[in-house]
Length: 148
Image 1 (cartoon, rainbow, N blue to C red):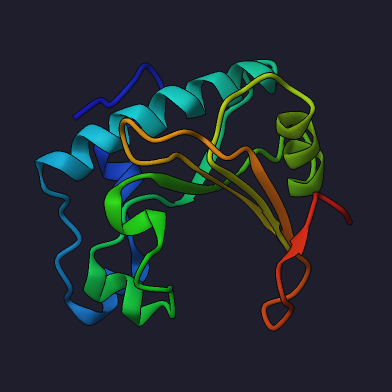
Image 2 (cartoon, rainbow, N blue to C red; image 1 turned 90 degrees about the vertical axis):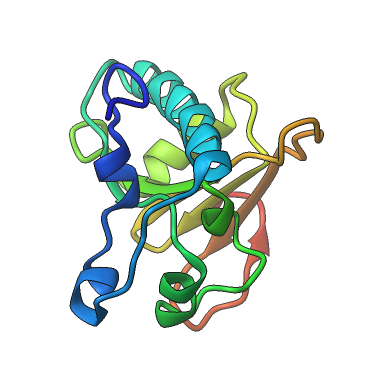
């Protein structure tokens, strides 16, 4: 199922952890609707990157999948409101994060996470915080702003 021109439900729900552990990672109707919003934002990010392809690492995560990967229970991924990705043909994850930060794109949360970019949206009807954070290593704390 296509969520947008360049993003499918399959790529926004694929999970190696779910496959390995036999966990169901199929989103419900609300999460699927949210993934359509995320896909629209990802189309804008793709355009910002000059139309270069984006590789999705993680989109929707069912609660059991989220627990298995060590995610927090309030993760936007559990609601279909987030995407972790890279765009190697554009540049490093840091370069992509900076490009998004310097654009006029609306997001709730933008995180440069030591090898990929996380972008999240707020729940429908809520205001986007435009929060930008950096996490330089797996064990590091989140820091305000985008930095390398």
